[in-house]
Amino acid sequence: MANFFKEFKDFAMKGNVIDMAVGVIIGAAFGKIVSSLVDDIIMPLVGVATGGMNFTDYKWVIQSAVMNGQEIVKPEVTMNWGSWIQTIVDFLIVAFCIFVAIKFINNLKKKEEEAPAAPAEPSSEEKLLTEIRDLLKEDVTRK
Image 1 (cartoon, rainbow, N blue to C red):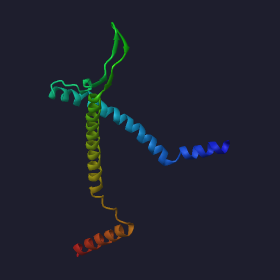
Image 2: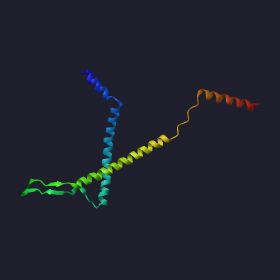
Image 3: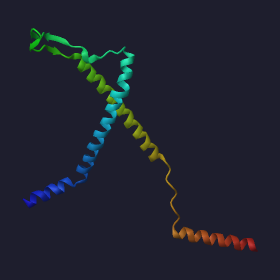
């Protein structure tokens, strides 16, 4: 049993597992940000642009509801194609937002990689030779 827990500990502490866990957590948080962007900012604008049309209300009734006065005996059977279209639109907007975010991050990385590296500090030999050169210049200018 102790060997089992040791194997589990080794597995859980591998770098790839931890990196994946961090990625999943950050991905979930980013998903909430993108969902809020879609639900709270983009979809109201789409609603205004389409005259307040809400696709989720569109459906095809396959079988009407069976009623007994005001009581529903058997609910209607519908194919909710409007909800399906709304889901596709949501997906396209989320995919576009993720594409833009990744493109932005890649551009930042690209600029970081292209930045010139700082010049290397001279070695101790180069420093010594520079001092000798400067001393020789001083000596020549004194004569």
